[in-house]
Image 1 (cartoon, rainbow, N blue to C red):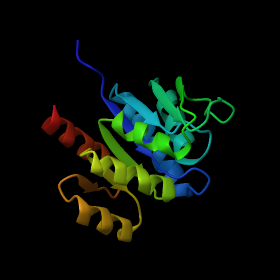
Image 2 (image 1 turned 90 degrees about the vertical axis):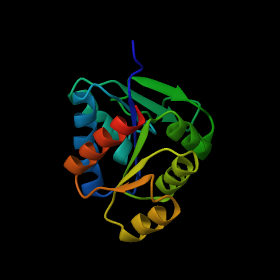
Image 3 (image 1 turned 45 degrees about the horizontal axis):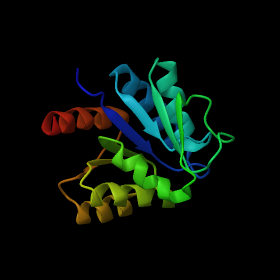
Length: 166
C-alpha cells in the first residue's frame, strides 16, 4: 500500500480576496477528486476555510493544522484537527507534512510558509496575482518555485511535480 499524497494549500485568512477564496474552493474540490489529502491551516476563515469546504463537497479528507490549543476557530470542513499551541510556528508543520505546497494568494503568514517550504526543498506553486512575490521566490529557488495563472494550470503542475518526485 502506498502513502496518500498530501497537498498543502496555504493562503491568507482574514485578508483573503474573493479571487483567493474562489480559487481555494475549486482547488480543494479538485484535490479531493484526485483522492489526495488536503492540508491547510485549519481555521474557519479565508483560503483555509474555502479549500476545506471545496474538498468536503467532493468527498475528500481534510487536515487542519491549528495554531491554538482548542478547536474554537476550526473550519467545519476539517476532518482531522491537529492542535499545536504553536501560533505561527505551526507553519513549519504545515509545509513539512505536505508533499507540495500551493500558495493561493499572498499574506504574511503565507510568505513564511512559502519560505519554510523552499528552505526545506519542498516544491511550491504560486497561484497569486502578485508578480513581486513570484519574482522574489523564483529568485531564491528557481527549481522549486512554480507559477500558475489559474486552477487548471495549478493541477497540471501538481501532477507533473508528483511524477518527478514519485
